[in-house]
Structure formats: C-alpha cells, structure tokens
Image 1 (tube, helix red, strand yellow):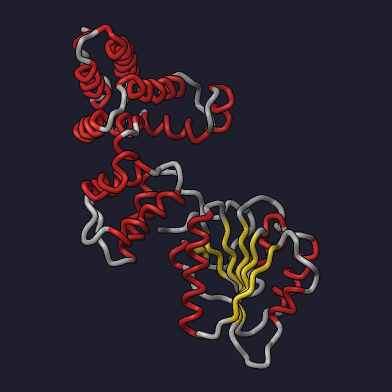
Image 2: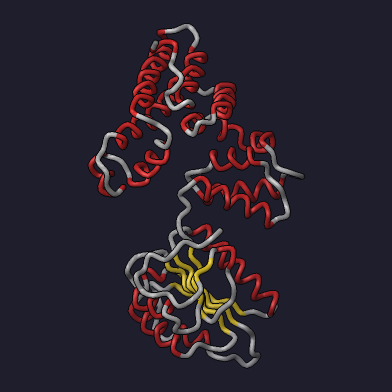
Length: 346
C-alpha cells in the first residue's frame, strides 16, 4: 500500500514509506491518524530489531507527560551495549520539555538506538517534524493516513492475508470490508480471527459463517451494491439480509438516505467538500462519497430512482402484498442508474 504524500508544505528530504514498508533508521516518524496501521508498523519494526538483536531493550515514553532529560538517559550507552528501541507516543500533545530534548537529540543521535515518534496530526510539534523531514537525524517517515475508500480497506485486508500466506476470494474480501467498513480496528480483528480459526482459503461462506449477522443485516451493504451497479450482488445481499430477519422498511430507508445525499450533491454548486458539507448539512466524507456514487448517473435517472424509492417505501409499508418484490424492483432501478423504469412508475 503506497504512502500518501505528506500534507506539510516543508520540503521532505527523507523517505516516506507505507506502514508495511517500515524499516530501521535512527529516527522513525510514524505520522497520520490511522492508529491500526501505526501500531502494525511499530510492531513490525520491533520484531525486525529483535531478530537483529534478541537482547533489544524497549522503552516507552509519553510525550505529553515527559520530564526533562529522560530521552537522553534512555539513549545513553549501557554497560552491555544492547540495541535500544525508544517508542514515544502522543507527540502531537508533547510537552515543551520533550520538544526541546527531541530537537537536541536529532543533532546527535545515539548509536544502536532507534527512536520512534508517534504523531497523529495537528500543529503541535511542527518544528520537530519539520526538522526530521528536512533530514536532521537521518530518519524515515511512516505515513499512516486514514483509509477512507473501500478499495483502500480491501488492499489492507488483502495484505493481511498475503502476509500470512493465505488466500481470500474477491467476494469474501468485499463482504468482510462491507461488514466492518466503519472501523478499521474491527476489520483488522476480524482478519486475525479468520486467520487463526478458519483453515484453508477464505471464501464468502466462511465470512458468512463467522460474521453472517454483521454482513447479512447491513441494509447499507444492499444499497451500496445496487448504487455501484452490482445488480446480482445487491440481490444476494438482500436475500441474506431478509433470511437473517432484516425488515424491508429499514432497507428502503438505507436506499433513501444514500439517494437523498446524492440528490443534494447533484443539485449543489461546485465547491470543496468541506464548504458544501456545511451548507448541505452533511459531513465532508459524505459529500465525497455521494460524488463517487453519482458517477454514471444523470438527472433523469436520479429522478426515476427517487420515484422508485417512493413507490418501494409505500409498498413495504402495506401498499402492496409482496414487499420483497418491491425491494427487488427498487434494486433493478437503482443498479441500472435509473435507466430501468419501475413498473409502478410507468
């Protein structure tokens, strides 16, 4: 997974690497808000250093409550000459004492010592970060940007299974990410459980067996598949949801929520997602998602989708005898991006 460019305007003179490309250096800056990736990178670095020196001495510091001089004490040579790993958390909340000591340490780093600085973001400690990125201390930066897109999360899962020498099918990959798309920590835990407990290749049946309730009852998974144009996948997701006891009404509600956001964004003037979000009553990421969902849609198709939603809403609330057929009819309209007309709207 490639690292994203740093948002800083300071010229970066050191390597910027993805979390799974971490390597030793006198100073390792682990930046970005994605704690799961940061934890993985730091753990991988620790294990690598331990293979080089089983006697590796590991120390942890909290930058926020740091007392002056402790970094230099931990980095000073020992009688036995062990390698050292010093992990510093909370650099985005660092005390003045830590920033002074860290800046001084960069000028003369200790031999056989790896200093890891975890900074989640923000302006606190900018002078220290700028110095590291300019090359002072001979460091590297591990960029742990937030994974927002499903494709990025699928890459993460794929890497997890590849690193373990295991295979997961594309369908199982989509189901797993769809079930835990809102929480990367839960997604990572689900990967670990499948790797530990499920033998052989991981397919859709395996994911359904372990996380069936999570996958099958996610109304938004049905809506996402249909909006993405995956008609067959949406019907399969619908069948799983209904078989697990999901009610048709919230499924239509999930469609309505997403199409409503798409309609808002489609009718809005051009502008940045942050600016539009405040005027539309949406979060910036929702604006970005709606823009992606609108790919391939036109105004006429969006109008037909809204009409089909109104018909489906009435059907599942008692206007028709077969609410399941009404849902299938809605999926056909949405998956075709409004090119297929609902029978009730002709």
